[in-house]
Length: 159
Image 1 (cartoon, helix red, strand yellow):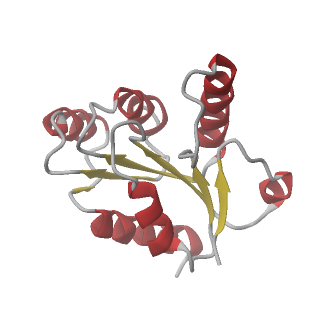
Image 2 (cartoon, rainbow, N blue to C red):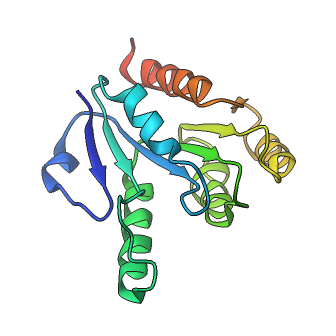
């Protein structure tokens, strides 16, 4: 059963765990709750999942924004795998940044990338990723993103 860590939660015992960890990078503001769908699909995995989408985020609280940004940065650095989902409904500027910093600039790091067909900057994601990480397959559904995560987990665990 997956252990889900939702921002800004901490659970330090996991850092010594042998379970692989996954960060769900992707749109939050102005996007559907795609993270809930991913968590449902991955809940039976032996996996630590870092979920940045809080149930209630105090958008006008500057200190909450700082805590969120720091939490996400820390978990992105710690995660064994980062999945990126570019959801329709937003330009996902932070996700583009995270893809560049934590995905495309780190050629040995396992990443899974998905782009909603209606995402307005999808060609940017395709071209930039193809240039930096030509081995990364970009998918267009959450179901296929889960498949890519399973492929990566299989390589990591030898299954």
